[in-house]
Amino acid sequence: MSRFRPHSVMLPLKDKDKPIVQKLLSAGCCARCILRFCCVSVQAAYRRPHQETLQELKSFISDADNGKPKDSTEAKEENIESHDAVGPEPPEDPPSKRVKLDPSEGAAGGVMDGEWSVCVVCLGVLQELCGAAQAVKIAKAVKAEKYEFDSLVLSVSLPAQLCVREHSCWLHVKNELRAKSVAVDKDDIIQVKEAFKWVLQGLVSKELGGVAVVTRSVFEVGVEFTHPETDADCHFLATTCPDCFKPTKNKQSVFTRMAVVKALEKIPDAKFLRHYPSPPAAPSGSCSSQDVQCLHVSVFVAGRYNKFCRSLPQTPWLIDGERRMESSVEELIAAPVLLSFRADGFNFSSSGREDVDVRTLGNGRPFAMELLNPHRSRLSRVEMKQLQETINASSDKIRVRDLQIVTREAMSRMKEGEEEKTKSYTALIWTQKPIERQDITFIDDIKDLTLDQKTPLRVLHRRALAVRQRVIHSMSTRYLDSHHFYLGLKTQAGTYIKEFVHGDFGRTKPNLCQLLKSDTDILELDVESVDVDWPPPIPE
Image (cartoon, rainbow, N blue to C red):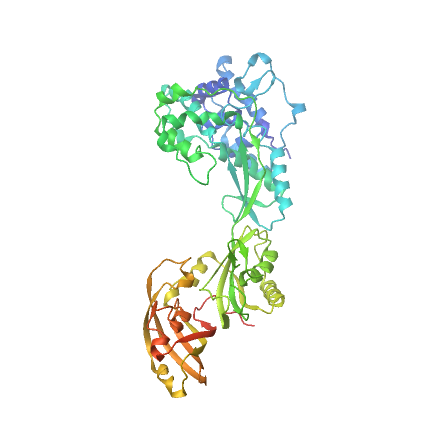
């Protein structure tokens, strides 16, 4: 059975495209950019070797001179589309096998001095940088990172000056289009990024053993191109459209792609042409391909933790840049998790936080971790159980339960209505004045006591000064001796328990000192429960 070869396929061009093709060839555009400007959306046309397409374009425009049929579309676009079904195209010829054309042709059609010249629009992105060698480079970088993935999306970052050069070429052919009464808008031109992906997606998929290269995926492979030689192409826009270019903290240059596109939309054609040549000047070299960047979307892990130590902060404790404690709850949990998911970093959050000297008992405090750029994104239930056991075996200061992978959307449930939730505490109280058992029993009868709490002095450095109303729903007492008793509290989340006990120099009212008519202080505090029903419990 005969196999259909790509070089036997005619390009999907019409007679009206001839003058456009001629102008763009003369301007120094590459074959694929000419197809873009002719609004060719048949993907297989871009996958053919660009030198081969160039030869056919030259034959196409010479048809009129030779009296040959004028419309190559009669070869049927279906032929090109059918080529998609027979597998990937053969690789482009290596430099040693390239056809050298007559030097007298100059830059026309992307040819200079008998060698292929760099395209004045894409700066080589759709020429030598868009083929089998690039696909091998991408696949090699992906394999080296050892990600686990089922599909990937290919992203392309291009120099902003490509927009300027495309606009210049568009103006170069716009009058020709109008003269032919061809209704084509600049937005109809196929984007360089799209053409690049059409060529590369199948080649990259093949190099990665058939992995699907799709338009949406949790795994992104980014290819970036730069062209320092022509960076100055954009500079005239800063004076002609200064409002479009505002310095930003995170951007190295004000000439971002979005800013350049916005400026090109505003600048009148005549003004553009006074500052920039049309067609653009030929570059001396192609774009440079930067390192391939791989990025997996975040994975979210949640659970509950107990803290059994009174000298362990929740997060790393730094004062004036110096570490005060050797570890933290966050770090003890994060280290094994990062290792299992092979993530680059993490963000830790929880339903409230306890002080360094406070234990968290009962069912524990809900927490969640965003794992940044995980190289592994899926663990089975058995593997998650093993990870939980690894965390718990690593330290006797904490314990984790209900460890599970959750969605980004589910994370919000931990914070929803956080201040409406209740928390239960047990505090060891000291009183300056000697007390009898009957002196504290009245506290058991107090219900829904509303406090006015001015931001405590101890957290004023990190929280805004304000008076916050909080409710103590109920209290219970257990007498120990003439100066000590246990106080149980069920409170609205966000209540400062220590300040309620000692008054914080009158910044919390009412307080326990006022209720007992004695100076009081808190010696120990335990969180007994955090009443947030998330994440879902996992049976032991």
